[in-house]
Amino acid sequence: MVAYTGIQGQNILIVSSDPSNPTEGQIWYNSTSNLLKGYQFATVNAWASGGNLATARDQLAGAGTQTAALAFGGNPTSAATEEYNGTSWSGGGNLGTARYGIAGCGTQTSALAFGGNTGVTDTEEYDGSSWTSGGSMPTGQSYMGAAGTQTAGLGFGGNNPGPTRSSATIEYDGSSWTSGGNLGTGKWILAGAGTQTAGLAFGGAVASITNTAATEEYDGSSWTSGGNLNTARRGLGGAGTQTAALAFGGGTPNTAATEQYNGTSWTSGGTMGTARMYLAGCGTQTAGLAFGGGPPATAATEEYTGSVLAVKTITTS
Image: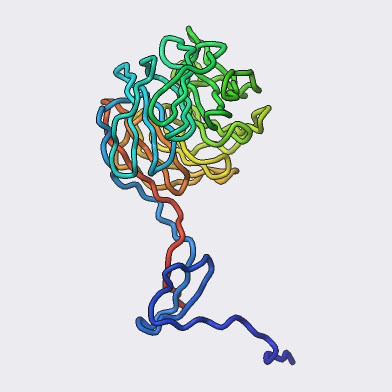
């Protein structure tokens, strides 16, 4: 016969009000509400409207976080930079070269902008107030994917003149670009996430405008295949890391679909309020930001909340 008297667990804390700063996995009994509660991850996966950009545009780039974001460049051909504080956008310093189809990465106070329409090779670095010239790209590209930081940036894919779509990868060290390992398939109008040594490329178009669902993972020297997006699309936005990425928007036709990557496969997330392509994004999988896009060009900004820690009532049913 099994003796149960020696089996012990943890005592459950009895409180009259919920703890103000609980820890993950903590459980307590609220004697006021007569409820057993715990602090655990709750799946929200929803978009909410944020403050509009001052200038509606698509084919722009982004950097930063949900509460400290940067938007720059775009179409109509623009040099404008805007800074987001989690509520509203305000003007920043203009790019030295106005362009659309631009790539970007980094933070609001340390961003990197490179490439763009008509084969621009210009690289610019932002310090929170103004842009200065960095090392030129080896080859002019537009509509590239991007990841990383201002001093460890990653650019991949893009549009060469003519029908060729690039498979090239370039790495930035804060002053100059060097070649990295090629993508498995040349593509453009794709999205990126992660870092220079743990990057993610997803979506885009191959050949002319044939949408792809392909995902590729970069280890700092070479790309390998990851799990495909559920919806093939180009001109989509991206955010997050290689093992916790967010894909949203894109076309055609314009979609509001959101997907979340766990390092192996993509699953559906919340639907955006505005279906659009050629948008920009930044942030994380649990706190993402989407802004701009079209057609027609929009100033709309949306904020994403993924799985977050929250107080949950525990039931026995």
